[in-house]
Length: 80
Image (cartoon, rainbow, N blue to C red):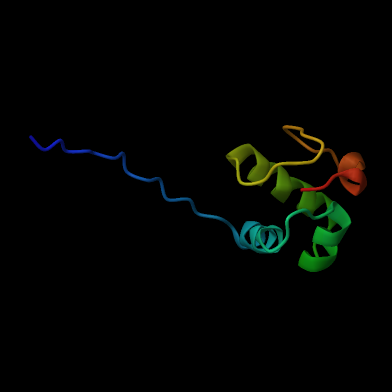
């Protein structure tokens, strides 16, 4: 008897250009600090914070030390 395994459909995720750029940077490194990310993507601190928070809430990025949201003041001492 053959059992049929039915897998749920995978969800398609659409990332913005900023999110794709951050993911590309983070994907090439094991650990990256927020100032390094900001230098690479050339975005304002507030935009980097917002983009990282959206990626963290979607589960694509984790912060070190772990937090669910990162505040602008915490960015210089946080790695991702």
